[in-house]
Length: 123
Image (cartoon, helix red, strand yellow):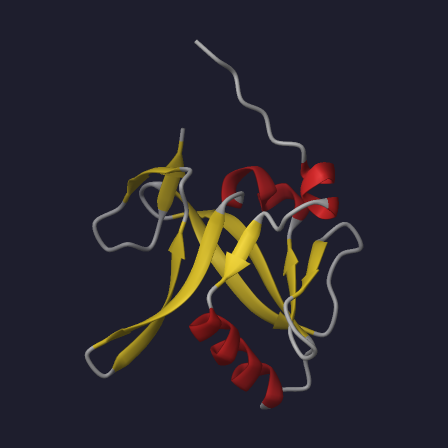
């Protein structure tokens, strides 16, 4: 049996704990251009029947301990430090389903999701 640990400090200085696909980046760029906010912030909250829910906010700034990734000249991604152990390795994508577009989180840490897809749980 092995034990894995996640060091948020190394995530802040090394490769991003969360990645964003080109489609999601273009979506965030459009959203920020229509608002006065400057960053996209990812956090989680306890919710639903399974445990957690992703929260995406457009923000002017966030808590000082957010981990910040400059995705391009216009888009900064802020990740809540307390969410890092749960979202580490997540890819954020924008997918088309028929005429709808939806942000999807491809999180390798998820062990269980509710039937409606709103909440998730990790081991």
